[in-house]
Image (cartoon, rainbow over all chains, first blue to last red):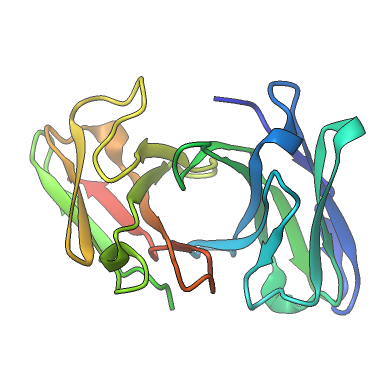
Length: 118
Length: 112
């Protein structure tokens, strides 16, 4: 399946902001449903946000009002703007493509680690 | 606490058959939403193992199979091999729209 590459993770203080990027050379981000899924250290997978091809966005309650998903079609890149970061946002963040005829994620990036700590 | 419930761990001997359960509710699996299964090897991203409850992507061995009934689903691994030792997650779509995509808490498979 398509290759996704995330960047932008790092160490950030509580209350800070960070923007993650996800790009691919194998398909058009704008033609697909693209999502962010995170995994806290030693924990399970948690869906964070999705951007549908038509432009509609959805968020998990845990990030609503603090995170914003968007895309830049000219750069074929998906973004996740994360504001007001909390310790509990510490996780590996994966971008993933939803299969066009199913609700499963058929392509995942390698993940980027976000650590929120003072 | 995850919306979908999985056992934290399952173990089996080489060559044995094991199953992993995934229990949801009336707004996801019970509403007819398909169930998908992912395998996550240590330090790696998840990869889809079974989609739409019982379909295998190309390249996935037929030792892996999935089924769904009512508000639950199962992943079966027959002829357990050492390389099957990994974490397994189920995932579905929730019609309540909050959250939209739901995962199980994950099951660690240990090969004895």
